[in-house]
Length: 189
Image (cartoon, rainbow, N blue to C red; front, side):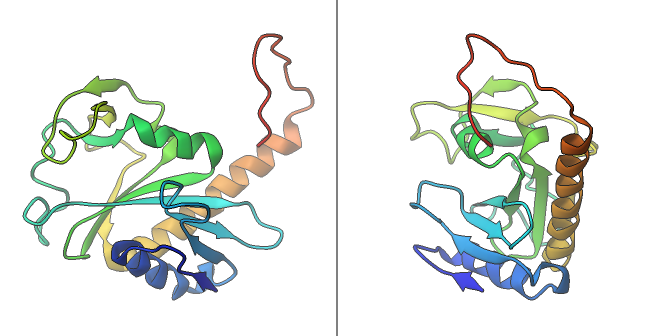
Protein backbone atom coordinates (compact mmCIF):
# COMPACT_ATOMS: atom_id res chain seq x y z
CA UNK A 1 0.00 0.00 0.00
CA UNK A 2 1.42 3.38 -0.97
CA UNK A 3 0.41 6.90 -0.03
CA UNK A 4 1.93 9.37 -2.52
CA UNK A 5 1.21 12.51 -0.48
CA UNK A 6 3.48 15.30 -1.76
CA UNK A 7 5.86 12.89 -3.49
CA UNK A 8 8.69 13.73 -5.83
CA UNK A 9 9.59 11.51 -8.78
CA UNK A 10 12.78 10.04 -7.25
CA UNK A 11 11.02 9.03 -4.05
CA UNK A 12 8.13 7.60 -6.09
CA UNK A 13 10.60 5.41 -7.99
CA UNK A 14 12.12 4.16 -4.73
CA UNK A 15 8.67 3.40 -3.31
CA UNK A 16 7.69 1.48 -6.43
CA UNK A 17 10.91 -0.52 -6.29
CA UNK A 18 10.43 -1.37 -2.60
CA UNK A 19 6.77 -2.36 -2.91
CA UNK A 20 7.65 -4.90 -5.61
CA UNK A 21 10.03 -6.76 -3.29
CA UNK A 22 8.50 -9.86 -1.69
CA UNK A 23 10.08 -9.33 1.76
CA UNK A 24 8.76 -5.75 1.95
CA UNK A 25 5.12 -6.46 0.96
CA UNK A 26 3.95 -6.31 4.61
CA UNK A 27 4.92 -2.64 4.85
CA UNK A 28 2.82 0.39 4.09
CA UNK A 29 5.06 3.05 2.55
CA UNK A 30 4.10 6.68 3.02
CA UNK A 31 5.93 9.52 1.32
CA UNK A 32 6.44 12.67 3.37
CA UNK A 33 4.10 11.50 6.14
CA UNK A 34 3.72 14.95 7.73
CA UNK A 35 5.23 17.57 5.42
CA UNK A 36 7.73 17.74 2.60
CA UNK A 37 10.28 18.75 5.26
CA UNK A 38 9.88 15.46 7.15
CA UNK A 39 11.49 12.11 6.39
CA UNK A 40 10.98 11.07 2.75
CA UNK A 41 9.58 7.55 3.25
CA UNK A 42 8.01 5.98 6.31
CA UNK A 43 7.54 2.20 6.34
CA UNK A 44 5.06 0.71 8.78
CA UNK A 45 3.48 -2.70 9.32
CA UNK A 46 1.28 -4.08 12.11
CA UNK A 47 3.49 -5.74 14.72
CA UNK A 48 6.70 -4.43 13.18
CA UNK A 49 8.92 -1.48 13.94
CA UNK A 50 8.49 1.82 12.17
CA UNK A 51 11.31 2.37 9.71
CA UNK A 52 12.25 5.47 7.75
CA UNK A 53 14.21 6.11 4.57
CA UNK A 54 15.70 9.45 3.60
CA UNK A 55 16.30 9.65 -0.16
CA UNK A 56 18.71 12.02 -1.83
CA UNK A 57 19.48 12.29 -5.52
CA UNK A 58 22.60 13.55 -7.21
CA UNK A 59 22.79 16.07 -10.03
CA UNK A 60 23.22 15.00 -13.64
CA UNK A 61 26.82 14.38 -14.59
CA UNK A 62 27.97 13.92 -10.97
CA UNK A 63 27.40 10.16 -10.79
CA UNK A 64 27.77 8.26 -14.08
CA UNK A 65 25.76 5.06 -14.51
CA UNK A 66 28.93 2.94 -14.65
CA UNK A 67 30.61 4.44 -11.55
CA UNK A 68 30.14 2.84 -8.10
CA UNK A 69 29.75 6.27 -6.47
CA UNK A 70 29.76 9.95 -7.54
CA UNK A 71 33.11 11.01 -8.93
CA UNK A 72 32.52 14.41 -7.35
CA UNK A 73 32.76 12.98 -3.83
CA UNK A 74 36.13 14.36 -2.82
CA UNK A 75 35.60 14.17 0.95
CA UNK A 76 33.55 10.98 1.36
CA UNK A 77 29.95 9.90 1.95
CA UNK A 78 28.37 13.01 3.44
CA UNK A 79 25.00 13.82 4.93
CA UNK A 80 24.02 17.39 5.88
CA UNK A 81 23.78 17.95 9.64
CA UNK A 82 20.26 19.35 9.16
CA UNK A 83 19.13 15.78 8.36
CA UNK A 84 19.96 14.56 11.90
CA UNK A 85 16.48 15.56 13.05
CA UNK A 86 15.16 12.61 11.00
CA UNK A 87 17.38 10.16 12.87
CA UNK A 88 16.33 11.67 16.20
CA UNK A 89 12.68 11.14 15.25
CA UNK A 90 13.15 7.77 13.46
CA UNK A 91 16.15 5.95 14.98
CA UNK A 92 15.55 2.85 12.83
CA UNK A 93 16.30 4.52 9.53
CA UNK A 94 18.54 4.40 6.49
CA UNK A 95 19.94 7.07 4.20
CA UNK A 96 19.92 6.38 0.44
CA UNK A 97 21.68 8.35 -2.27
CA UNK A 98 20.86 7.66 -5.92
CA UNK A 99 22.38 8.57 -9.23
CA UNK A 100 20.26 10.56 -11.73
CA UNK A 101 19.92 7.55 -14.07
CA UNK A 102 18.42 5.49 -11.23
CA UNK A 103 20.96 2.71 -11.83
CA UNK A 104 23.24 3.06 -8.76
CA UNK A 105 22.59 3.57 -5.05
CA UNK A 106 24.58 4.17 -1.89
CA UNK A 107 23.01 3.23 1.45
CA UNK A 108 24.02 3.62 5.09
CA UNK A 109 22.11 3.23 8.35
CA UNK A 110 21.59 6.67 9.86
CA UNK A 111 23.01 5.41 13.17
CA UNK A 112 26.39 5.00 11.46
CA UNK A 113 26.15 8.25 9.54
CA UNK A 114 25.45 10.32 12.63
CA UNK A 115 28.20 8.67 14.67
CA UNK A 116 30.78 10.19 12.32
CA UNK A 117 32.65 13.46 12.62
CA UNK A 118 31.28 16.75 11.32
CA UNK A 119 33.08 18.84 8.71
CA UNK A 120 32.16 22.16 7.20
CA UNK A 121 32.72 22.70 3.50
CA UNK A 122 30.98 24.06 0.44
CA UNK A 123 29.91 21.81 -2.35
CA UNK A 124 28.10 22.68 -5.56
CA UNK A 125 24.66 21.74 -4.25
CA UNK A 126 24.93 23.18 -0.72
CA UNK A 127 26.24 26.71 -1.27
CA UNK A 128 22.76 28.19 -0.89
CA UNK A 129 22.38 26.82 2.65
CA UNK A 130 23.45 28.88 5.66
CA UNK A 131 24.94 25.81 7.36
CA UNK A 132 27.23 23.65 5.25
CA UNK A 133 28.18 21.15 7.91
CA UNK A 134 28.16 17.48 7.02
CA UNK A 135 28.50 14.17 8.81
CA UNK A 136 31.22 12.48 6.84
CA UNK A 137 32.23 8.84 6.36
CA UNK A 138 35.66 9.19 4.79
CA UNK A 139 36.50 5.53 4.13
CA UNK A 140 34.85 3.97 1.07
CA UNK A 141 35.55 0.62 2.77
CA UNK A 142 33.47 1.55 5.84
CA UNK A 143 31.37 -1.54 6.67
CA UNK A 144 28.19 0.54 7.06
CA UNK A 145 28.28 1.71 3.44
CA UNK A 146 26.68 -0.27 0.63
CA UNK A 147 27.27 0.78 -2.98
CA UNK A 148 25.00 -1.25 -5.22
CA UNK A 149 22.94 -1.43 -8.38
CA UNK A 150 19.44 -0.04 -7.89
CA UNK A 151 18.11 -3.50 -8.80
CA UNK A 152 19.54 -4.73 -5.45
CA UNK A 153 18.34 -1.78 -3.35
CA UNK A 154 15.10 -3.40 -2.12
CA UNK A 155 17.00 -6.47 -0.88
CA UNK A 156 19.54 -4.26 0.90
CA UNK A 157 16.77 -2.17 2.51
CA UNK A 158 14.90 -5.34 3.53
CA UNK A 159 18.01 -6.77 5.17
CA UNK A 160 18.71 -3.51 7.01
CA UNK A 161 15.12 -3.47 8.30
CA UNK A 162 15.50 -7.06 9.48
CA UNK A 163 18.70 -6.45 11.43
CA UNK A 164 17.68 -3.06 12.82
CA UNK A 165 14.54 -4.77 14.10
CA UNK A 166 16.56 -7.62 15.61
CA UNK A 167 18.87 -5.11 17.30
CA UNK A 168 15.89 -3.38 18.87
CA UNK A 169 14.41 -6.70 20.07
CA UNK A 170 17.64 -7.98 21.62
CA UNK A 171 18.22 -4.67 23.41
CA UNK A 172 14.66 -4.68 24.75
CA UNK A 173 14.98 -8.30 25.87
CA UNK A 174 18.21 -7.87 27.82
CA UNK A 175 17.88 -4.32 29.12
CA UNK A 176 16.74 -4.74 32.72
CA UNK A 177 17.20 -1.13 33.86
CA UNK A 178 17.58 2.18 32.10
CA UNK A 179 19.52 5.09 33.57
CA UNK A 180 17.77 8.27 34.57
CA UNK A 181 19.69 11.39 33.66
CA UNK A 182 18.44 14.17 35.96
CA UNK A 183 19.19 17.06 33.60
CA UNK A 184 18.25 15.38 30.32
CA UNK A 185 14.88 15.86 28.69
CA UNK A 186 13.15 12.50 28.35
CA UNK A 187 12.09 11.68 24.83
CA UNK A 188 9.86 8.72 24.02
CA UNK A 189 10.96 6.51 21.17
